[in-house]
Amino acid sequence: MAVVYNTTIDQGADWFFNITYADPNGDPINITDYTAACQLRSFPKAPTSVLTLTTGDGITIVGASGEVNLHATAAQTTIIDEGTYYYDVEITAPVYGTVTRLVQGQIVVSAEVTRT
Image 1 (cartoon, one colour):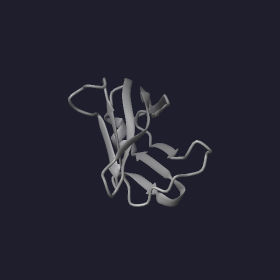
Image 2 (tube, one colour):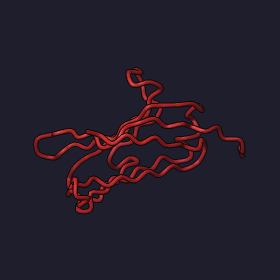
Image 3 (cartoon, helix red, strand yellow):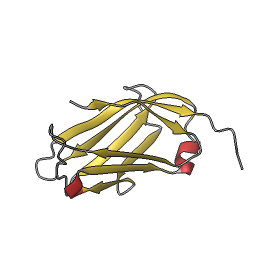
Image 4 (cartoon, one colour):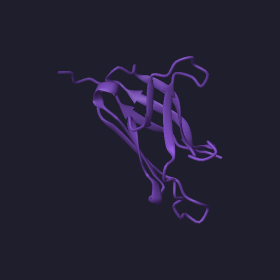
């Protein structure tokens, strides 16, 4: 079962979010050669996402340590309207394609005031 974690994105700023996939004892699970994806939507069944990150395009996996590191650029967060959104982060195993949802929740995008 995915961990529920609610967080915030500051509109117009870089956003970093790091997850470690671990077993019940807290030991990292090796996810070498896995891929990952994250989508942010206005509601869970919304037909389009307002932000999509994938392995190599905003997501970096550090396999042996079980780390999944997300980064959305300031340019990406600038175009997201302020408000509450839903997201999840899933990893896919390289051999059988098994998908595991690591985390899910709500993200509040806070409005940017300073513009250049």
